[in-house]
Image (cartoon, rainbow, N blue to C red):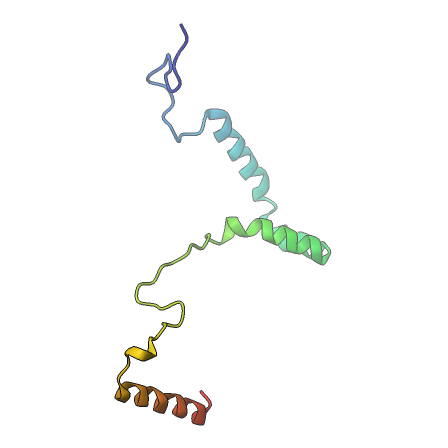
Length: 108
């Protein structure tokens, strides 16, 4: 009878999220080999044509700049509020009319 999904014969095995030894060694080797070329990146980019340079920069950006996320802001109205004109009093209508006239006069 085989093991069920998520089970292992080695309960003391490598914890989740820890890369295996081969991955860690590969990353270190790659880091070491790239270390001598970091100062030459601007020179490499300058040797590329515009299209390839933009493509290379675009691919490098996620490793340099953090990814931005959406921010929700409370109290900010994203669209114009709808006003039921019939529910406004005469004074409120006159005040709004004065505001519109002022905006038109000042060119705001």
